[in-house]
Image (cartoon, rainbow, N blue to C red):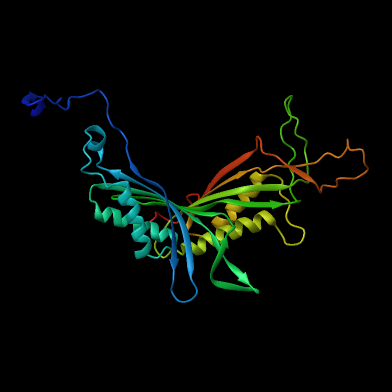
Length: 325
């Protein structure tokens, strides 16, 4: 390709040869790829009347499809820019109701698949960060809120163009604690065991829960979310007076999962992750005082901790059929 160059008053033509793109086999193959936008945060305010509703979401979207030439040839003609993906999420938050969150995710995925025929699947992970109404003189305020508690709601979706969608929901960072009716004993003791057995300890955890659905149509997603959390909390706490003894985190986890599956037929599998949040009794024995510590003062611990995880599923006898839209 000739290019004109000036040197003083003279003009020279220089021929520049551009390297050709090599298309021969490299001995490698692009076997898997996807891309998208992470950490898309937004607040949706619903202003239907004087009493407003708010939803604060954080979204990750990943697209699968015919994007190989962007990787192998630097050709971006098939790429939906991640900034466009972000803007589309903002627009769809206005166009479709956020609640129930699972239904909004299905609508987002369907929109991308309808808009771009070369996309083969849409992956979404959405987290809802809670806000609670401020109470003034015992009454809920119409449009003033404080950061909520009760964990962070999560929805995950993989929507393929062909095939069955995979939808799960749940929550994380549900911090719970009970001061008694928990123990841990009868475990293996060998030459490395130093942990004492106990029938009375503080049981604290930061619960994570994820469950899958066996059907999507005519499913009350938001009610299911609240019911799962209600079962998890009531099983952990036990009876209002006296509570219920927990011999291990494992048994409490399994009992919770059983109750969810027995109560909510739309849930197919449920998984829990329960890390131990340790509170150890402060040792007053070496104090030069007669002040007793009757299981009342504990120190926190931020070191190695136990982690208990399990998934409980319906067996073939209780299976409700394949998921359907």
